[in-house]
Length: 152
Image (cartoon, rainbow, N blue to C red; front, top):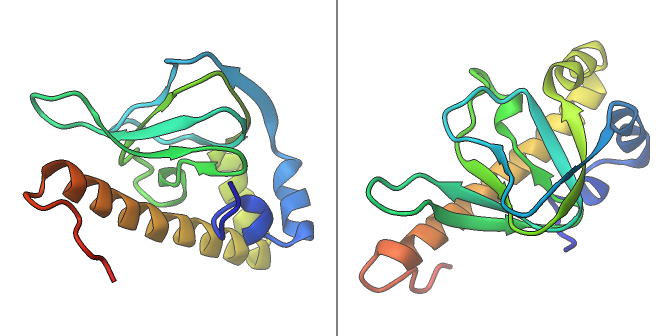
């Protein structure tokens, strides 16, 4: 998947290199819960292989899958904004290999290097905007009487 929200599209090479210095490789089996809605957001991931579903708790129902993320996509943005609480949940839909980042270390780097911090903030902001739009469309499809209809 290539979009304006992937790390390679959003960050210039120098900033990608700085960020990747903080990465560690992780893997998750299908069905593993990466994070839970309402809990502390202390890390984030960039998917290398596999798919992660973002979901929203719906009382009395199974969690509603809002979006599925794949190669190159940022999993988690709540780490970037106080109070650093997950707004959604995330679960591996298939075996996932990813780069994991310690949120505190990345925020500290952003503070030390304001230009890097600005680039990360713009990237994360674009991700948030895209995810909010996807959430709206998905929830309308699930619960509105006529679906999402024509969104211009």
